[in-house]
Image: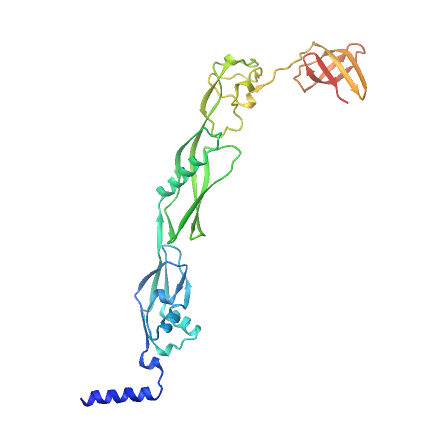
Length: 323
């Protein structure tokens, strides 16, 4: 009974003397050896439990920034001494605190795992959805991604970026850009093996060199044009009347460098030479000394003057002197 009375008297004396609240109710901080955070910055209230009165004091302490959080899925250590330093830098009298903290707190950044299989589907879906009208059929044979990735928790968005190429290649690099809550966090590289099938002109039968192509010589067939799409010929009308520049096998896809327009004039052909300058127009009979296609320059002898000149082929009967 005497002890209880003494304690009561002591409390009354402290209250009457205006002793600070922290003397009566010290701030107690406790923490575990290991904790986890979601945000990119670490605040004291995320890694320690704060028991303080009034509650405004606990809120002030909890908002003190400790430092940068580790990358998603990784861990960093924060020592008790560093926490004391940040408290002092924030104007807190650490002598009024009861710190029941371990020597070091391990802080792990929470993460969401995106597997290689999930990223492969992202790439496949994008390529199939964005295939151009020229890519009649796209066959993706493989998507190579090195590892799974860990992303911070939040609203995850991704964008597949396809590298622009002059002609589709069998191996096409792409990137997957990840954002969390609207902010960029990671870019993942992928290598795609693909085939692009298109309807192109192929030969029905072997064509010898200089064979003039007719509609009976060619047909349309779907072939794999990956890596050669910029040179293959897709229209029969664009090859009929041209000739093979070299021997071409049966069922070969025709490329622009495999055909050419045949010469319209041959050595010994008689042609009309036209020379024009302003309102003056002169014509003469000539003889071709070589072979030439429309628009090409050929040597021609003027049969009246016996002089050799250079003229541009207009058609199989006409050449023009260019001044």
